[in-house]
Length: 363
Image 1: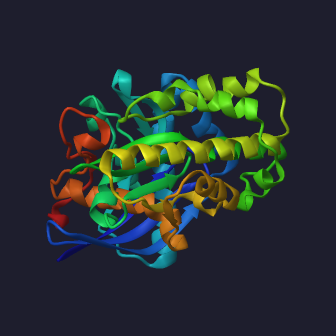
Image 2: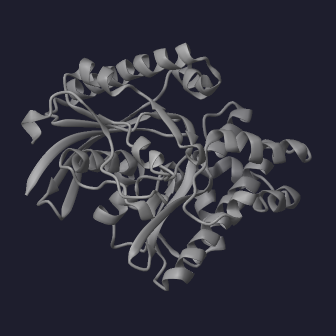
């Protein structure tokens, strides 16, 4: 077995910070195992949260500058993390932060310039994991299915409750994956109506009442009727979901939150049922992502579904995505497929990721 110590870097659509995980990825070339050795979430300063959330509205020079500056910022956080924990690192695998994601137009862009990260850290970097798949006509998201297949295939399905809820699982001999619905991205935005960053433990939603008119309108959104593969972006939320909320009656934040929680639970249940009908397997579901800590959300998911939901240890709940990007980095430098076409609908499988730095010691 050969082992790599990889820093997996993840910044998700929920804008709650940057996850950094030092992961030991071991492989004999076919089988893989992992250990998350150190991990930390770096909360974004308000200036970075605003800059990243508004970047899709900026001009080309602002975008180019942010790509480079954010790469330097990632590199600086990595250096602090390495120094704090006195780490030996072989490789960095960075997802970056998604600004544009329009796979139907073959466009996806994540800021966080890999060359800048490598220059600041003096370490080899794999970045830009999505572009190759999107260029081949794929959705470029969600990408965690490769980790679900190689590291967590004892579960029938893997559900991630991040900014968006996404799922992967087997249909026949092939694993498929897709975004189900928005999750923390709308719950966090609703929490900010009460000057809170998020709904801790689902306490706000627990106090609310479901608005069934809004709930019915949300569940009728066209996206939910589309077949997989499919993926979502922030612009979709603004044009589709929030427009429905604005067009309806004015609701208290807690009532809006409770309605969203029921909506998310219903859509997740529908997706699990849809996949299980195609596959005729069990319904053992691994649940990770920040939403797994939201007790009210989990209660509503369980109310809608007869699946068995398993929440692992806190470290895996929080850092599974950064772990999987570390795995994808290892697959990239060893020239193995890290995105299969069945995950995304691309024309062919991909060995995806841009390389910056000196990889000679790893090969």
